[in-house]
Length: 407
Image (cartoon, rainbow, N blue to C red; front, side, top):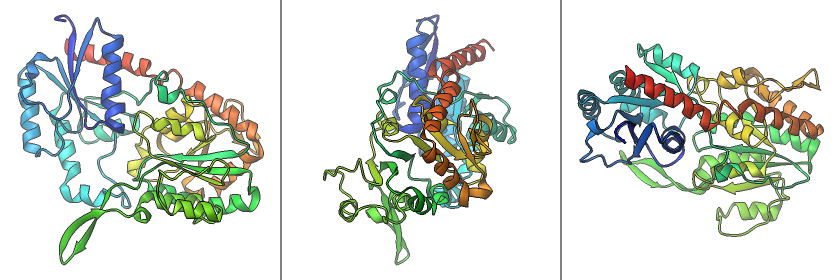
């Protein structure tokens, strides 16, 4: 082991970002480059760690979440003074848009200054896209390398079989912070109902009623459990059902119980609620629909978002309709021009100035031409299968770490 490059990884969490930016990439590095690298992964507890035993310490945004900035900066200096390189990963822009549920909290806490101060102290920054790398470099941080998000298609959640259906299924899969994005789809389902009633199904994946909400009572901030109808998920559901007007009366009654343990055969309903799953089963949601939607409001935060939705949809060979901004604009080739299918087209793009009509226009054409859905999915797979495979990004990471140590 003495000749190996030793890497200590400190993930920010055990869910999405921790999995894709810290855990999976380094497990793959350890398993496929075992003659060159040795990786340890620790969650939270770093007491007693001798950092000088490692060549590289990698963390995502924070060494330990919630610690004061001064503690983090002192810890980075301590690690560097022992001869170890410190690499920080940044996967999102540090200023959240108005409408994001954490925007006020991040602004009041000075998160942007905190985040950038840590970045400046590190030896190198890894990030997801060239667009975000440019934003980081604008802050005077020059040591930045792009290591894209990627997946291992051999992971079980990316090997699911798509369910059969006689309907064209339109799906949205994501987290609870996208209300301003999903809002862009308002009115689309109403138009689909008027033209394609019975021919399509909307699918919402990741439904979750857990969490808390903060209320101000008598000048005090009080947290309480969030009520199901207060969640972002209920808002998403209303957008995808035209305020529950597309569903049958008995299914509406079932939905308003908000109980995942009560069975209901919703496979043939105009809408399908798919409850949240653990991070290692999250992508199985793609087995339940044919077309993935990726609406994004145009703002600096979304302009630097990664291509993860493209990657996931591509490995599942799904058609995707995405906002014409950021990496979506640079990666996807519009599959329809002048009403005809473009050979090699791997997606459909919606202009931010045409949200009121293009979501419907694209969906209308795909419902009328279901063979285009399959072609788009196959083409998207060709786009992502090599560049966004974990083996490709791990090769890039291996080369970067070797160069960093040789310096």
